[in-house]
Length: 300
Ligand SMILES: NC(=O)c1ccc[n+]([C@@H]2O[C@H](COP(=O)([O-])OP(=O)(O)OC[C@H]3O[C@@H](n4cnc5c(N)ncnc54)[C@H](OP(=O)(O)O)[C@@H]3O)[C@@H](O)[C@H]2O)c1
Image 1 (cartoon, rainbow, N blue to C red):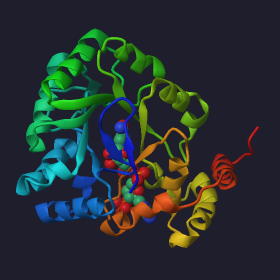
Image 2 (cartoon, helix red, strand yellow):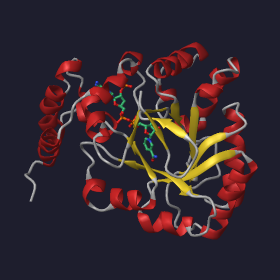
Image 3 (tube, rainbow, N blue to C red):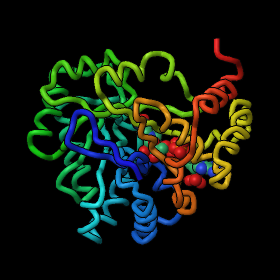
């Protein structure tokens, strides 16, 4: 598996990242089962794991953390990304009347402490602000992220779902560089390829992670755009069993911004051979054929 050194940090991530949003959706929550998914990812060279405090109604970090607690050597074999600022309405927070975002110092610090505890680790490799908070006080949030980096509790900080003005406002109040923006990107979610988002990220040297790179599974469904692209993806992955998922990742990997797709399958058989995505040839012609098929119209 190819590895990517982040532009603004002495940190390398595996080119494919394993996301654990759906970990608690699995019926089997045993430590052994979670460990077998982690091992399947590691066997592919996928060492970077993407979390958020809220995943699985606030339970995924702790589920994953049990595997880390059971084998203290495991933590050093991986990089951990997690996120905070989304405050879900949940039975865990019955006082909340509405879902909201919180980028205050008190809330970020509280959630980082919870993530460290749940994950049985003394540091997070990258902490992301999960979604732009309209009430963000950039000076307060920036100083909080800087202080967390200086304390060693997080190695680096980044954002998710931010547009350029939002991350530049936060960056303007920080001494450390933001390293990641995690955004939704896939064959079926292409706006960032043409609206300047990916250009702005490259200009600022912020590495891009792509969430829901299979459109959250919609790529396998009955929507017209999905039906139009599947035959092309199958053909592109012909030498790799026609695996549509691998071709969809290869399509993202082709982009010069060095996108890091965050894969979300809970299926161990689908984790196996994910690394083949990096072998799939995706030339300019095939890349545009897929773009055009997904869009349902030719390039202007
Ligand atoms: N920053 C954010 O705001 C944000 C938002 C959403 C997600 N994320 C991150 O991105 C990660 C990935 O998101 P995602 O889970 O939506 O990714 P995804 O890879 O686009 O979708 C995964 C879904 O596709 C299904 N799938 C995969 N291969 C399939 C196949 N061959 N046939 C049918 N279904 C198939 C999976 O089912 P199986 O499990 O059965 O394979 C799963 O339900 C998350 O874990 C999380 O870390 C971040």
